[in-house]
Every structure is written in C-alpha cells, then in structure tokens.
Image (cartoon, rainbow, N blue to C red; front, side):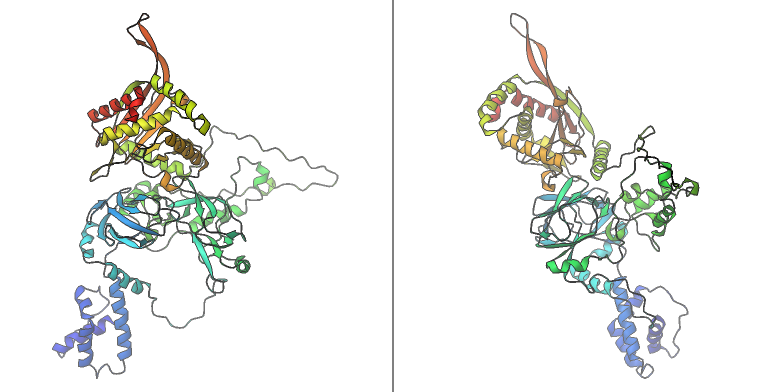
Length: 640
C-alpha cells in the first residue's frame, strides 16, 4: 500500500514515477499524503490505471488511516479514577496537587478526590511526568475508571499532548480496539469450554475494588456468604485484608451468590480480579457450578504451610514437585516488557529478569514496587528416592502408630509479612528518611487532671462512661493546635497546608500492626464524646472493622505508651502531618516547695513532641508544648 501511494503522487508531475524499494518508516509527510483530498486527486488522475482496484485501495486507505491514528501519539499512560472507598461509584476532582509538566515521584500526591465518604488523596505508584490533565478541578460525578490525566516517562514527550482532549481520547478508543483484517480462512481453533458470556444466564462479576488509595493487592480473609445464599443490598459479602486494615466488602445490589472464584486465604489478589459471580434469579445458580473465567486458571485454595513433616510423608508429593516448579518458568512474559525507568534500573542492579516479574501498574506495567517485592522461583528439589515411600503392612504385622508431629527445630521461624505490616514498614522508612525530625520534651504536673477525672467519672458513672487520662490529652492537644496552628499543618511538597479543624489520630496497637483511627473535630467535642469515640474506634481497629474514612487523614497524632510503664519515647511522624506527640506514664516525684517539709509529691508525666522541621520551627514547637502544658496543669481552662 505504501509503495502504491508513493508512486501515484510523483506521477502527476513526471512521466517516470520513482519507486521505493523495501519498506521504510512512515514519515510525517507520508501521513499527510494519506488524507482523503490527496488520495482523491490521485485516484481521479489514475482512474484508468486503477480501474477494478478501487475497493482494494479504499480498504487499504481505511486501514492505514486507522493505524496512523493509533500510533500518532508517543508512549504514554492513562491514569484512571480508582474506587477510593468500597461504596464509591462517582468522584469529584477537588484539587490537582500537580500541574502539567511537573515531575511526579513515587508516592507523590497528584490530586484530591472527594468520594461518598471523605476527601482522599490520590497517590502515584511510580515516577513519571504529568503530560495532560483531562478532568479539571471541580468536575463532579466522574465515573470510576474514567481517564483523568495522561503521564509520560520522558519530559520531551509532554508537548505532543498539548491539544489532547477527552474527545480525541474517545476517538482513539474505537480505533485501538478495532480488530485486524481477517486472514485467510484456516482450520477453526478449538474454543475454550463454555467461554463466559456465551451460554450463561445473565450475571454480574464482582471485582476486587481498591479499598484504600494505596491498595494494589488484597487478601480474601473470609467469605461471609456461601454459594446459593441470597444477597441483600448492604450485606457483608467478604472480609478483605488491604495494605491498611481488614475491611468488610458490602454488596451493592440484591441477588444470589452463584460462584466463588477466589477461595478464602488467597493472598496478593490484584485489583480488578473477579471474586465471585452474582445472579438475579435463584434458578440460574446451578448454571455456574463449573464456571471458569476465560484466560484465568482456577485458583486452588492455599495449602497450609506445614511446620515440620516426617521424611516418609514427603515422598508421595515428590512426583508433583517438578511440575509445580515449572509453572512460574512457563508464566514468563513474551515480547516487549513494559516497565518504568526506575524499575528497569533497579532490576539491572539486582540482576532480575523483568520477563519474570508480574506488573501491577497501568496495563500491566512493571513498577519499582514490583521489582522490590519480586521473589524468584526456587528450583525444584530432587525427587526423593523410592525407598523413602511408605511400606505396605504385611499380614500378621501390626502397623506402628503414627508419629506425633515433631516440635519445630532450628534457630528461627520465618513469619510471612502481611499487607498491613508491609505498608507500615514502607511509610515509617519513608518518614524517617525524608522528614527532618527533631524532638522536644517537657514534664507536666498531672495532679489536677487526676483529681478532675475522678470527680467527672463519678458524675457520668450512670451513663456507663469512664474518662481516661488519654481523653484529657487528646482534648488538650486539639486546643493547643488551635492556639498554635503551625503545628496543625501538613507538608504538601509545593505548599504548607494549615488546617482549620483538628482531627486527632490516635495510635492503636492491633495484632496485625499499628493503625491510627481518627477523632474528628476533637477541638469542639467534649470529654465524654471523645471517650466514646476512642473506645469505639479502638475496638473496631482491633477487630479489623475500621472503614477507610475512619483512619485516612488526620492533622495531628497522639501515641500513648504510658499504660505500659514507659517513661518517655520519641515517635515517628505520620506524613503528611507535621507533628506527633509521644506520651509516657506518670510517676510520683518530689518537687521543691515552700512549706514545712520543703517538698511536695506530685504526679509528673513526660511527653515528647516530634516535629517536621520543614513545617514547624523549634520555637513554634516549644510554644505548642507550653500551651499543651497549661491546659493539663489547669484543666479548667479547657472550658474557656
């Protein structure tokens, strides 16, 4: 087709057309040559020569026009709006934190999205450049999955997207999805058995959503419903362990659970993976008994890891070991591997073959996190000799009783890292490496707080409320943040955001790791309301029932280890917050006094304020501690 067009145009000017030998790259001039107007003139000039070939030329012209539209843009990534809460269907772009042309580092906040629960920061998972913003600030009711911006790996590619719009994106989508022209008839390939959508009743696939802004994978901890059960709107379908907490996944519509495709305990399930099948009619359930997702192998339930096993028990499983070990090698991707520049550099340093790495980025793109968490497949162990197989009992011989599983041997035990623990480790390391911490400590006389607490508890005992010292600390922290608003600020890379409300994050220890549920508007709540919130949030945190909006955000954090007998400690800042207060226990100390004895006994408590020096200077941190101490040493002033 290319040679034909190149012959036509020179022939208008010369009697001897030039012929190009061999395929060549398509230059920009050639694309312009394929416009309808140019081809129209050439076809008219050579209508006699090309008679009988008009249909072929039109087909070739349409195909080339389609391909030129698809490949006219440089390599880029389309960033789609994710589901930032379990019930989110639409979102509002509240604010763009990056501008077109800005560089985006891994973990940078690019936008704030208002969901049906709260306003949540949207972070990027890899390094890139923001080439084009397609959905402007303030745009409301943006559907999940809509392309909101375009990113590129090279800043030199940004000008190519200067005039790119959603309309052009919509025009490119059908072209990119158009199938290639059919080849010559061949023997029909055997179709996969019962491809989904071919002969199944109407159904809906329930996909794994993003239950937190940074979630890329999840673990199905528990199914709350069984196959065949009726599902009502709002019913708890399953419990999903994310990178933040274990969250209940609710059903949005009524129906029946027809098929569970991901068994309980399956770890590292990528976002968008079909979890189960839901149907409207109970009579349609049986049709999905043997349902298998096309192109996705059935996921077997995870086998429990044996602590230790006798040598004889390992023999029967030996023949299956080589086949199981060969599976990862067979899964190596073929053709071009798409990876971010940082991922390629990291893989080269570690000697990792990117063809073996599974990408979790857009369109399967390999990110830095994929390379860091990649574990190469181990070689299959040699099969155990047949002599190790169990011997069949001979007649007249009583078989020996099965041996009790031996006690684990060795000097250590490897404990798998949960998603929550992995994220905690990443965020704490990021905080320590990127935030310039400094620490301020002060001792506070808690006598008046303890006396007031005793009196108030007697008053609210009938209401089943018991105030703790931590409730007074949260209230005093919130009021001190109003007095010194610089401490109630956040570092946002390009600006320092000073918050006008005080949402206090309270550190809670859970079996799966540390989490910080939030007491919202602590500055305007009374002690009883704060007490109810902290008790409720702590219980939900330990049960893994917190919703994302209950632990995402916060403007100031309090971490109290006084109940464990800790005198003082230094806490790590929870970004993007600027301060965290570490509270130790109170103890009786002798203080100089102007009385007959010359001393007094007082309950003294040590606190340490960790500050981000980019936001809070040393003098500002000292002012905050002074206000905090005033509120606790004279708690009646918290009423003013």
